[in-house]
Image 1 (cartoon, rainbow, N blue to C red):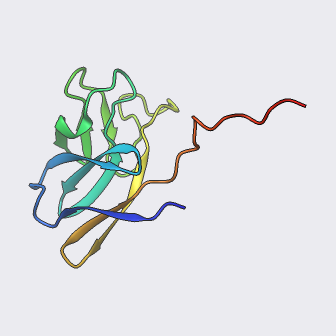
Image 2: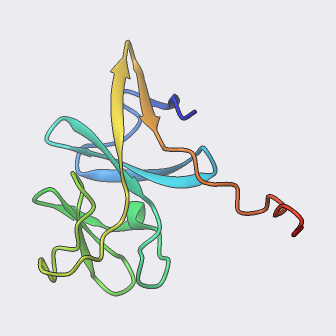
Image 3: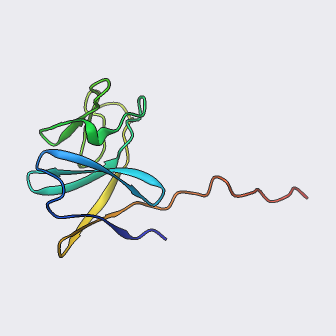
Length: 117
């Protein structure tokens, strides 16, 4: 069962920037935009660049390699709104001075299959 995990402290991320943190087996890009913390999968679905290293503007992040833009609220690909391509977005909570992120459990891809009968 997935749960909220503390990844940083309030104030660790400058306004308009992002940082990457490992959470539940994934790299998460955590951003501070207009005083709100937002979290998405840190890897660009195009070529795998770290989105937390990208340029943040108007609630979006631009991939630092090829400038693909993703919405920080829902992970949608802003360069082609009709596309189903998106990156995962995650819930964020603030408790005291801690920033917590909830990343759903991934299916265990390494579990052995049941033997055929």
